[in-house]
Image (cartoon, rainbow, N blue to C red; front, side, top):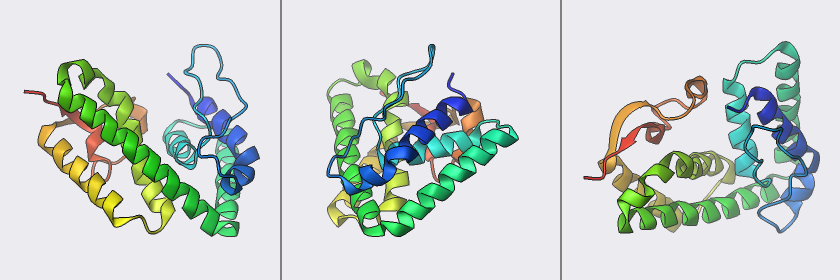
Length: 190
């Protein structure tokens, strides 16, 4: 199970190149750091990935040094967002578009073969969480994309049986059920 150090390592690597990333055309950026043995590999750098790692880090137990490191990273992120607001929002909107397509693709696969895709939900729902985070970071999003997400959420609500938080219990504090309802329960397929 990843620790706060795992999240901080990704955030530290990301913050060191975040300004270049925001100003570049690329949506997925090499992060330049390897995960320690026993941890999953780090994803490429994206705003959604940074915001997601930040939320996960906030939920994990931290000592005062880790807390200080996270606060420093968060302050640097705020500074970059304020300095490059238009570029930040443009990058967040582009990533929202990309992740929405991937989230929709998952549901298309699920519709075609629920049994073969049910076990992917716990992983694929990362995309839905990042869509939530990116919507807050992007400013105005195209109406068609907002409506598409609402439609996908409507379908998901009909299949979701409310229940316990689906990820590591310590992460629940950063993902409350009122906003992240899709992380609380499981999918019924029949």
